[in-house]
Length: 394
Image (tube, rainbow, N blue to C red; front, side, top):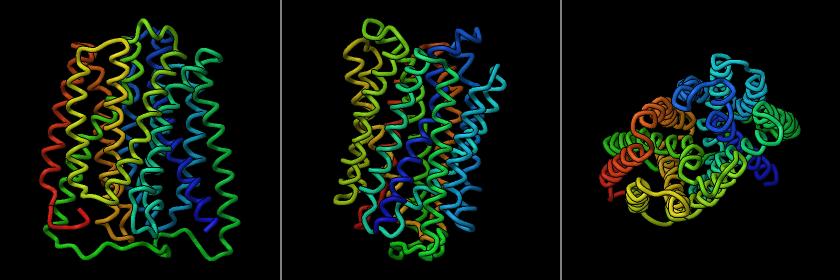
């Protein structure tokens, strides 16, 4: 039991670091690199695209290796790899070098979701709360990316914003490797095949096809919404909180406030999907997203800050829903691969969302972006309506 709790802690730390590393560049680009490299925000942020392409493409081989070799071994590779890649990013002297380092970060970041989430749900009958707690750590990584990057930019340099978290990740990787060495004599290899897993009940093929189709469709749109809101929020605040925020640190604090408050929505949603119909919860969350995005289109100042908290609550709240569905529908021997397919959809869309944000912002500004996101949320709501009511688990 003690080892299970320690392993869960490492998985939570991994989720925190995964999202932290992916968004360091978003804040650094918005608040400092545009000045140092003499590029506009719209010109600079597409250099993050290779990172998110790698994040998506590499999810499938990461899931396959985890199922065939060792999930815990892959998590050790994650900690060491992503930390080392971030340290390299601190040495970049040009946008091209930065894009190469970000792509390397994306390769190692791709390991976490198909591997870590499969480990989180192992042996659990009710997965909602466990996934929600893990999700809170991931969202706190999103929150701390803006805060930590802004603080380090103002107090040290943008290079430190990459190097210091990278060193921390390598240290955590060493601790995790030591944990695995201590744990090994107890006869747990960390392989997917030897884990005791709560298996789903037999489900008709037609229902599986329907549910996974809905999962992948809503995952794609959810990826667009998640990436657009988390990646662009520091820049949104830079433009719309002019009277409230006048430095990189203050913008980072406001982004941290919004992300950290919103992170705990996953605990509420995790409880709801463990005790009520996933379909009903999904419909409610998607509907609220659409409402908040429409309201946000014309706001600035304090009202924009309040509504940003609202839409991030439901954006983060949606995350565990599809993960719960995958965990309930997929059998243990291919659960990592099921998660990898779900996340390759998410991260492929996230990769395309970066140039999309640049294009929309450069031509029309964030008002149009929030209108598009409202439409995407309505499509998610429509898809969730078709989840079957007949299955108790749904």
